[in-house]
Length: 145
Image 1 (cartoon, rainbow, N blue to C red):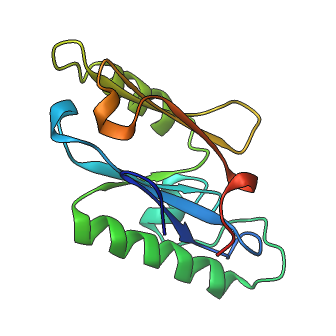
Image 2 (image 1 turned 90 degrees about the horizontal axis):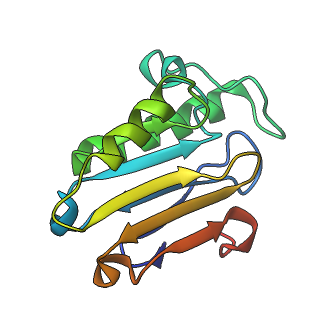
């Protein structure tokens, strides 16, 4: 379900009922491509690489969690996007540095999760036509799937 231009929510109810992950497609003016953000559907790189269920689940067995990881892997592979785990202490700092260095003139994209919240911050600086300026999306403010 597209919730903003270039941003789609994907139901990944394996961690909690109604959990959502996000697919973000970047405009060509910032290098194109995109990301699939697993968030709590896959906490760490190991969850993705070894298809291991997340440790905390409400109302779902490990097989449901693993199926959500496989769903996200398929989406990422079909689009050629990177699948980003939700809480990996190595991946997030590296991704932040990478995106900060993706400057194209005055335009760059910044994607981050606001510390201690369920908010995905998508900022496209100097290119309001890409996503319509800076957007902050709250998981609990998104449409129910």
